[in-house]
Image (cartoon, rainbow, N blue to C red):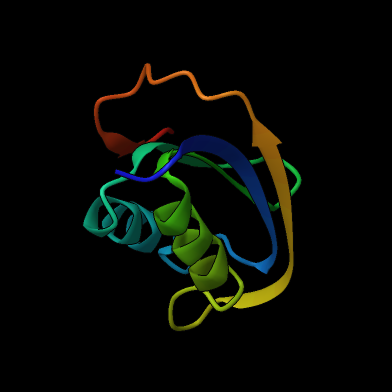
Length: 93
């Protein structure tokens, strides 16, 4: 098992109303990650993910492209202390 890490990812661009959260949940779960994804009032999407560092990096790379119809302009990554408190990866409304 790889090093366990946590990250906040902030994605900006045309990322709301294009199923970004649903695609993110699917991608994160396929990578074995836990955490959540939500829309922010300023139009960005925030992702909090925990898991193996390699899988987190794959999610970050995916965020730079996003799902079909999304236009990703910027991805900001903030590494934070691993908590291990999430059991699944969900959408927060």
